[in-house]
Length: 194
Image (tube, rainbow, N blue to C red; front, top):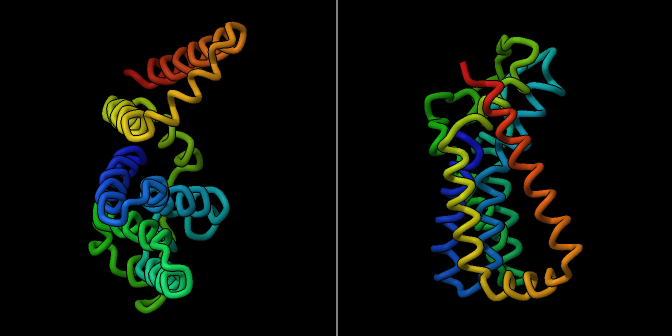
């Protein structure tokens, strides 16, 4: 599953948790938890540990780290009555579910079923997979959905920020930066088309 698809699932979990506890701060934490395994394991496995493991589903894709986050969440809840780490853990659990980690028991139950196995990916696999992900229309759709949901949920805060942007020179700089970002994204997408 792609990164923004995981983020969308985390956002939906966050919406449910926010409705239950009445605190919108858990939205971002659930999204963070949903993308955290890929944000940590992919660069760690494919760049830092490329000579040994060269695999993107290692520590944060396993139950051991998830269990430690849940334990830390229990401690935080006991002392502060906050569910912040539970929201992160819920996002991480959704990531593991949608990656189908039960099909990779050595990684999922690490270190209890033995050491992580080495995988042989091409040298430029990490960067090529990032570019391939940026070229996926579904990722752009999820980006728009996530941005729209955040804009709807945080509309008062967004209105206050937009009021601040009334300054014409600041508005022009923002439009120029946004235009350059869209142009860069289109260039990357067109480069990957066959």
